[in-house]
Length: 275
Image (cartoon, rainbow, N blue to C red; front, side, top):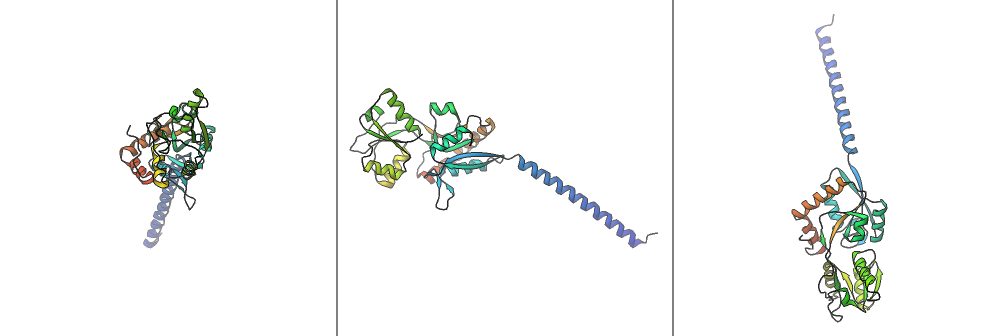
């Protein structure tokens, strides 16, 4: 027969075993929940720029920076079910990657046009105004249409909407003007004007403001030759749930002033579409 002390010891041992078992079950349960939770987070490969200040580029430490990068981070933060993984490149490669399926989404000041609408899906909320204006020196005169640019040299960046617009006019008006093509930085554009490499730069107001502010180019422009905004763009096979989720967050960021804040911070002005 056990004495009182032995009996008490047995109860304590049994209680300890029960506690250990309960803790083990809880750990296994929480581990299962954690594993299940992590498995529901979907990685989305997103394309953006690597040398397009101040939109998307690598800073002095080699880290992604710029307005589009900051906006992607803001969107990602509001979508815990997704994890954005960046793929940075030049603009033509970004388009190729998205079309081939190497990326699912892209954000690099991308405008809509008929050709892109055939190959990609677009978000519904624009975040930067990209109305095309024809920038010139005062000595060249103000241009209000592509027909006004007859006999002049135009510079366009490869694969941009401005290149598409410039080429579309040439299809119906062969030899109306000559075109210089490339992937120039803003400094190189300024140098192109200074060296008379070209006379006209189809560009949005932001780019013209930047050239005038940073490089004292004193460029002028007339009426818009095309109305456009920058939108998130998706692979044609992108999950509609992803597209809807990004659209919802973009609308929230526009309404709460985040888009305007990012525009002022990175572009030094409010270039957020009013529509």
